[in-house]
Length: 315
Figure 1 (cartoon, rainbow, N blue to C red):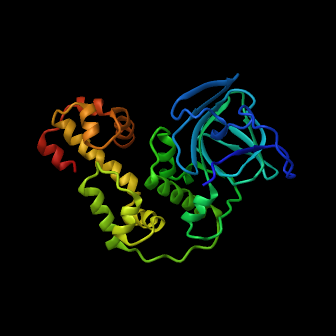
Figure 2: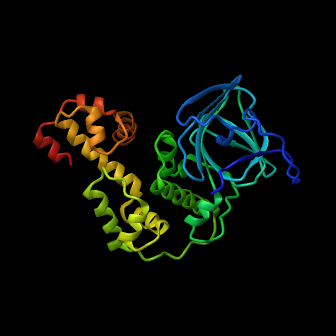
């Protein structure tokens, strides 16, 4: 799959000039130091490159002055404004994206970007190859979202999770989950006719679920899920979420956290609990633990324990 690239220059097909990171902060143009703050590339500009996968890039950007010149990407660019007010011209109209709002930019659409106020702006964003989205759509044409700004009320919690932890690894299962999440986001906001519901293969989804529950510390290849369910990976990702309210990757993470909580409650040191639960290390566990529980493992372990009868009655 071709690596996503950024293209600056005229829309007339002539050769574009060399990409300028200060003008178009796309991860393909940035230092390949995943999860590392790249510092200020010029006055008022910061970038942090997250972990990606084949056809997927993630980053966090901040601008305290002029942002970037008109340019195009050959990917979808879907982000959430985290601070300030982002202003950009897209398809001939000046748009504003407020904190908490999502912006959806389609491939090969000319756009620029700037702060609408003197306070600057920041965002987190994922760039994804449209071929990957098309696979998640099951061969249907790519939906087009005419209004590129989605109000905070219409945000997708699943997308929030992918952008909250930029340092989290994206394996093949996570890559499929993210593509299905974005395909669903595009479908919901494109405004087309409702799709005919597909019967849910619940028994097959239960087989995948039971495999994960049996040993959450194991990261099963997507091909194993396909073999167990007798379905392709895209159908599994869609139907698992319909059946259980979350993706296979997220479901596994939550079961890993269950294991870690039990081990930590039993007195096992945090670093050892992380490895036993299948996390890469303590830092990896801490990020996902806090994102799910709201506390770091250390703070959770230090909290006063409830009496057993109260703990049981609280569910």
